[in-house]
Length: 298
Ligand SMILES: [Zn+2]
Image: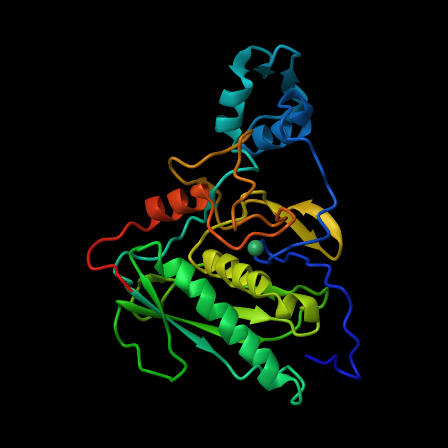
């Protein structure tokens, strides 16, 4: 696909916004998470979130953590207590178990210059198609269905996600929304929109089928409440903890710090080379969170 003449593309910096972006480069921090004691700052952060004052936490070289002067715990206990930054986690809200079909519509990409719109949309459609195959292969409670027509959905078994285009001030490739309560049905539905920025997704990415597939696998994960397993945020080239707004709940049975699942599709900072398939941790997380109830074949 040619470059737009008036808007030179630049290599995507893959920034994260509100915990909802996909990142593949620009992951500045390379903390060695294999060394538990080496992650003292992270541990202190997590204990602070659990309500401990970090000034009153001591970490000893043998791995003992002493909080508030006289509360001893192991590093693992402290991690479990505080909530690691590295684990499969879900938001507080998850999709209601009545939702059985999620219609996915690819919009007209109106923010893309007209001459590039059809090509861009074709890449998007193909990325969505391949990503949804991966999702539906998991046989979860819900099935994703590609459906561009505006079929009425006055039915609390059906939800809808629109894919459109737009731009954020500091530049991200794509962003999604968290699950939310539908005002009419009172059910929790997936985040209703995924937005792509044509000016951030570069040509190489667009033409890389695995890249596009992973992008949509990842963003659909956010729409149903899956957070980054590495809880990074890359906003305007700053590397930050994305925080625990919207909830930060460990998904039962899934790996967590220090053995968190670096192969997850839900990392903000994917491994290189990027792999567009579910990790074992992803399968476990999604299967535990959205188990098939009945007739879950696509
Ligand atoms: Zn993300």
